[in-house]
Image 1 (cartoon, rainbow, N blue to C red):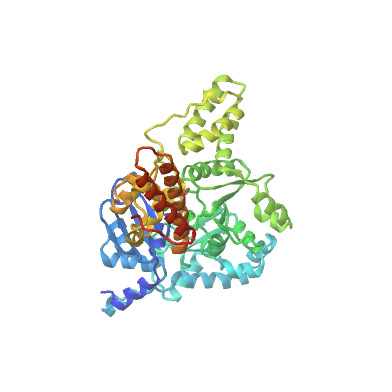
Image 2: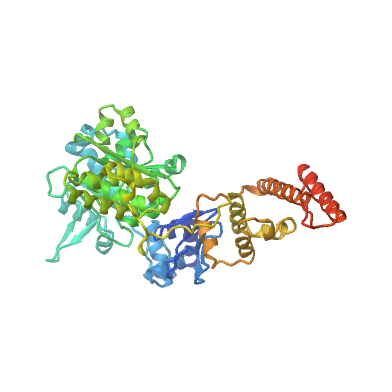
Length: 547
């Protein structure tokens, strides 16, 4: 049995946003994060992750719990299995009450990394290759770059260190062939340790320098290694990504190393695979702009096209930078073209424009049938975007095709990505006020002395729904997910906004009553005095009660 102290120590180093965000795409909503619930079908996100409480709750189906409970429910694991999975992913050693069942991590991957690093220092060919590519010794150390020898040497090393064969297979360091023989997965390759977002080593990437058929190989899929959810060097780039709100995604490990070396410390790379939907939760963190820095050859353009469709359809901002003439970021840095590289990275082709242009460039527009096919393919792409973006890019598609925008009828389909509900009238102040109330429900009681739904011109019903805590109201769900609507910062900020709003309201009421002829003179005089008094008090910075 896992000791309680061990479980508590593991919990202390877990972050529920990282845990849940590695499975589903979370979107910030004030101080919390929201997403469509992964445990039941829904259109409007009602699944909320609260970092301060380290908990999740779905207002639709009622599921709730901490990070461990989420892994249990999502992966269909029991409690000990979920604990062990989280411990493995964070490189944490668990302790057990029964010593015979002790499952301490052997630090196998860390041991291999250290050994590979020592072997690199002794291998002139490997060191020569790295130096020829322009990589500094400091970068070799920072990224933990090493060298894997022949298969028998690796197997002998594991045996000498008395490292578990079963664990080595489980963690992707070695494999077993159809004939039952063991073999090392990394043979005569420069090695690049791959880390989880928490910084724990979860596998390796390896580049051949002796002509193996596969240029790059990665660790095999395991409980702790999923190449479709990992980005190389993310643990090193994370701080810069959050600070700059930008992330450079490249195709290769060496590109990342060289970019960091040149000061572009917000660079990462996919692990020999295309960018997938499983990468999106990680890319979403910190809400950065995404810059795809890909090769300009046929394969690079195809990868950039696929990634741009995925990112634009998922609402990401950013663009594509293609490197022509066989160059890549590493080549430019080695040749001292850092300023030119920086200029390129700050002039990306926006994702949507890139996709539209690539679609059109694939067809001969002199052929009417091909032109028509290009039109239909572009319309299908536009349908993956929001209605506003569809409208904005219709003229762009028309100009590229040389046709009238009226020919581009996007319309709506049932398979369109769900978009935020369009309110009948977007009065930004009222919506911001309601969103603030939703995020800080504890302020409701103190506000009701000064404002109620009758004072709101456009969204009184949404205000009342928020007061009643109706989490099933789709208008409120849409509002929480609508990034155009900001909340008011702090109590003083809210107070100042409320004073401004009430001043405008009572000035309107004063103007109305002065022109009314349906009330008596005495009643009109009374109302005018009341409104003027409230306006004067508001000018002095006082909040005035409704009655």
